[in-house]
Structures are given as structure tokens and as C-alpha cells.
Length: 293
Image 1 (cartoon, rainbow, N blue to C red):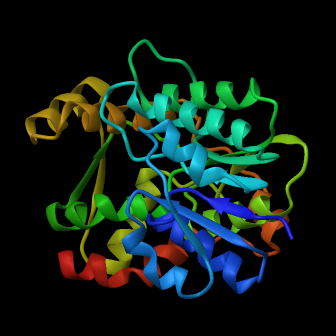
Image 2: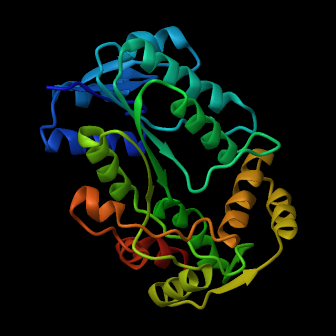
């Protein structure tokens, strides 16, 4: 059977993917991480765990050896530099050298080159490196995870306001568990070369988001739409690191331009199940909103 490799297996998405593969008895599974000690439970269940440091190309060559299909989960090096792109390019080069046949990459909606290092630019240049390789590939352009909603919505319930610069733009949020099921399916069976937008069932605006939050928490929450410049100023004033400020503002600008409102049936087609809606996700996390009320 084909050896399937999952990078970043110690992270939220990576672990879910490995769990899905184990449940499906998909075949020999390789899992890489910077700290193999965190995956001893998976090793006990038959997963071959290997150390891989994306800043150390020699470790990647060893870690990827023998894998036929590889899931490259984008790293968390979002620090305002080009470190993340370098890490991803290291991984693509190592995959080619190791004889990997097919690479699956977790990208983002509408990646594009930018003047300064950015999430959009990181994904754009990583995709470019994959396209230029000799590998077959599947690009999974995951929309924003539904879990990111919980990074700000409880505070909005508490304060009574959710501030954004989305200007009515919607997002087809995807639950991480749905993204993991898609990644697992693509890793097992995707063929050729294709780009897939991985989305939730329909776009949800910030105004619709606060309406659901108000209903579930029992407290009125308003959406306050501001300019990108005002949002940047407010986030900086709150003490967030510049790279995080850039990230959050860029996400809102992309939503305002309609880049996060793409809707596809990729989840249904690849997994045989409809994606979780934002309402369903928030209902299952109602406690986080009620505790903030």
C-alpha cells in the first residue's frame, strides 16, 4: 500500500488528518513533527513518527524518505518575514528529492503576491513552487476556519460590539474537522493536478454572525463596520504584534473584496458529507458565548 505522510501532525489539523486516516485504515502512515515526543500516542497505534524541522532541509530529506503521497500543512511561521515561504520551498524540494509522487498543500483563498511578506504572498509563492515541481499536486484553498470565529466573538458578546472592515463581505467558514476530512480524502485518492476551494455551505457576513451570537448568548451584539485604516489603528492600539495586525486587516480587506465568499461542493464531493454550517458550529460552542455574556 502507498505510504501516506502528514507534516505538522502535532498541530490541530494534522492530528485530525492522522486520526481520519487511522479510522479509514488508509495504509502505512508517516507523521512528521518538530517534537516526536508529542506523538507517542500515535506511534503506539502504528503510526511511524519522524522528526522534521522545516528550517533544516536535511531533516526533511530524511523524514520524507519512502513516502509516496505527502500532505504539506502550511506552517505557523507567520511573523512578517519570508521564513514561511522558505520553509515551504524546503519541503517541496525535499519531497521531490525523496521521490514523493503527489503533494497535497493546505493553501488559502485567492493567494496573491504582495509588496511585503504576507499570508496571501506566502501561499502564492508556495503554490508557485509546487507548480514548478515535477510532482502531481492538489492545492486545497481552505477558507477561514470556523474556529477563528471564537477568537473574537466571545469578546464581542462581552463588549456588545464586533468591529470589522469587511464592508458586508461574507465568508464561507470551514470547520477544521471538515477541512481535515477533505485533506485526508485528497491525500488518499486525489490524482493529477488540481486546485480546490474548500468551503463551508454558504457565505456568512459579520452582521449575520453577531445575530447568531445575540440569539445564542442572550445579549445584544452589534456589528460596527470601519475602514481598514481604522481597524489597523485599533488593533495596533490594543498592543497586537505588527505581523498579527497585518494579518487581521488583510483578512478583512479580502472579505470586503469578495475573496472569502466563494462556495463550492468540494467537501460534499470528496467526503460524502455536507460541511458544518456556522450556526451548527456556534450552537456546539454555545458555552463559549454564554460564559462571555
